[in-house]
Amino acid sequence: MSFAANWNKLDSFIFFFENRINAVRAVAHDNEQSEPDVELLIQAETEHLKKQNESLKKREMPAYLIEEKGEYFCPKCQYLQPGPQVRYCANCGHRVMTKIEPAK
Image (tube, rainbow, N blue to C red; front, side, top):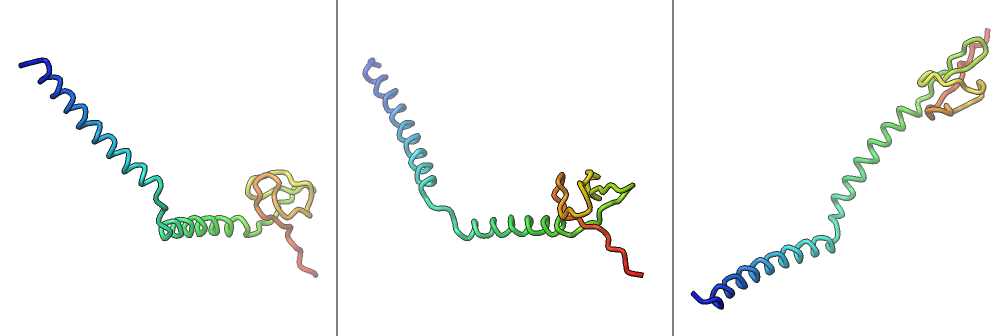
């Protein structure tokens, strides 16, 4: 077999794989340029907002401050509050309030 015949086989082999690689690149490039499915984006965002809403509902339910010797503590994280007038814990952000004593 001559040197030129071997070279043609090698060249054909390289050419075949270069075409395959370029075809894969073209498909990948087309996928990057295509717009995402709007319905899937809406569903994903809706799920995220539902989860966020549930966590906010849990956090926004007020908890009563714990009073010990004139000091007030958050019932969730036990953080010392500056006074009974606070509405949110400065440490964990939970909504807090003082107990209102019923009138006698």
